[in-house]
Amino acid sequence: MRSRALPAQYILLGGSQVIFYRLVLAFSQHIGFGPAFALIAGAAVVLSGYYAATVFHSKLRGLIAFAAFSGASGLIYLLMKSEDYALLIGSVTTFGALALTMVITRNLDWYGARIKE
Image (cartoon, rainbow, N blue to C red):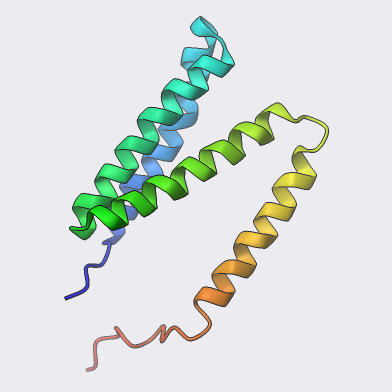
C-alpha cells in the first residue's frame, strides 16, 4: 500500500520553510549570516527528512527528502551569496524545476483519485 502525504503535512513542511527564513534572519543578527544559515539549514533539513520518513513509513523516502532539501538549501545559500547572478541562477533553476516536474508528471492520472458519485 502506498502512503500519501496529506494537505496538512504539506502545510507543515511549508511552514517549516517559512520559519527557516525567520530563524536565519534572527540568528544572523547575533552570529553572522554564514554560521546562522548553516545551523538553521542543518536543523531544517534533518527535521524535514525525519518527518518525510515518518509520514511515508520509509527510511529511503526520508533520505530522498533529506537529499532534496539539502540541495535546495545549498542552492538558496548560493543565491543569497551571489548578488550579481542571483536572478539568472534563480530563473534557470526555476525553469529546470518546472521542466523536471512536467516530465515526471506527464503520465500522471490527475483525476484517478477522484471520488465517484
